[in-house]
Image 1 (cartoon, rainbow, N blue to C red):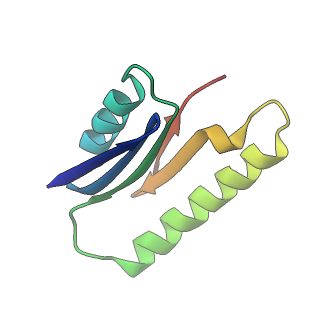
Image 2 (image 1 turned 180 degrees about the vertical axis):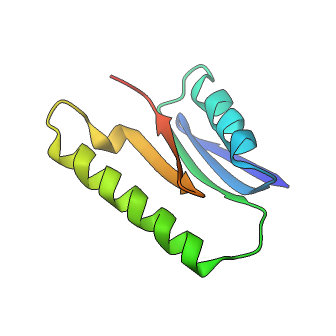
Amino acid sequence: ALKVKTLDGRIFLTGKVDDPEEKLHITKLAWETDGVRSVKNDIKIKEDFNFKQSAKDLLITSQLRTALIFNRQIKATNYQIDTYKKKIFIYGIRV
């Protein structure tokens, strides 16, 4: 089940979904809502925990986030990055 809370143009998403594509779709819908200023996405993928895979995904996310921070042409705070089984998902707005 998903929970959605809104406050002053900010949307907060929590809950669990079956796959990353579903998470991407829900996040996209949230960003497309009129008046939205930010989306905080804490949706998790339903799956058994795999420490080795999670560690690899965390490393990939960290490396990309670091690269974005050091690129002056990108406002890294406008994006949320998730990695799931070595596949990167980037959510956010381009300003």
